[in-house]
Length: 157
Image 1: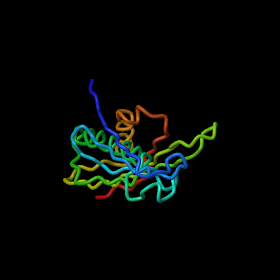
Image 2: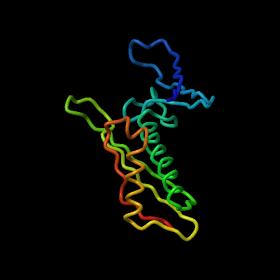
Image 3: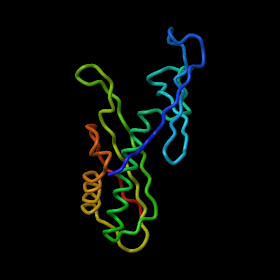
Image 4: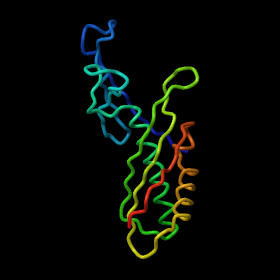
């Protein structure tokens, strides 16, 4: 159907690579031209070998799940006749160890707060239905084994 490209660039910046003393800072350049500063999470690789100001792969993973869910949900909400003013999600991913002791992002909790415009508003059952459909149709959610939940979030009006 389509291809999606990212170029990852890293260069050694010091003489102590073999001793593990090197920066892990790098860049992600996407096919549209945007370049993002990236780094491992300081929870995984300590500063100064990581940079907490940069995006880390775990954050990007959580953001991609949240973004895909939101985009799918907005499409479904519009088709159902709900006018949406804003959508904000403070998504949280949890890193745990699997049965082999290898860390992985085992769950992502989505916590959308949605503000509607207009008179038509979904009730709790309709809201749950739209989020369920969005999860089923989200390309990213269909690509991962991570548990993705849409947490109990109040509907903002």
